[in-house]
Amino acid sequence: MATRNPSRAPARTLLFIGAFIALTAVAADETKTRFKGVITAVQGDTITVVDQSRTAHTVDVSSDTVYKKTKGLTNVIHEKTDRSVLAAGLPVTVEGAASGDHVDAREISFRSEDLRTTRQIQAGMATTNAEVGAMNKRMDEFGTYEQLDAAEVTFDSGSATLSGKARSDLDAFAAKAKQTHNYAVVLQGFTDATGNAAANQRLSTQRANAVANYLQQHAGLAPGRVRAGDGMGVAPDAGSGSNSGARKVVAKLVVDKGVQAGAKP
Image 1: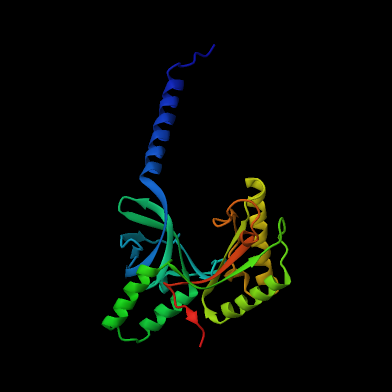
Image 2 (image 1 turned 135 degrees about the horizontal axis):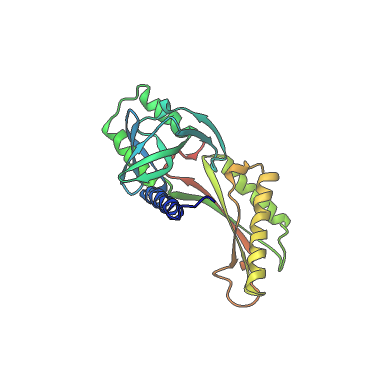
């Protein structure tokens, strides 16, 4: 009868444990990261990206890195491109794994409008001190929004149905939005102080969504420009009891100060 070697099983177990520890150590050295910034240098397979806090990141790209050119405020529409488009001055979003003081890029995305602006600068615009200052200001303001206009529409108690006046006010608000470059619409729904917290949360969300649907389906605003409504529950100025002024949605017309925006000519 064959005799088993009792030392083999523990040996295999030790090998497995050793391999597991090694893999765990490798995983611990790499941390997933995602950040926004502006490319300041491109050298071969390495690019330097300075984020909004002025921290410089060394980003390594490879044949596995995916490059995406996005369109629209929500960046839902995108198309793949190649690394040749990367250039100093281009605002990007980097996703990858941080290892030591380097980031191995898995994906680099950027807005088509920003790429067009960067190419215009490369095409022959002389870099003056004013342009350098403008680039620095743009980097400082990247992701900072400025409110250009606002509209408030109110609702009957317990209702998320838009009145005729509310529709008229939203039509006027949408008309101004259409005359603005690179705008976004932010919506916040509120209730008065009656009812329980859960019901007020649902109702405030329903009211914000009702306004979002009207602006897109009837007032002609592009879906990518209208952000999903936020239900905020009871309004800060609701007081106690029933308050008709607190049963509202506040619509804000904003622009990103870090991109070219403002009134259309």
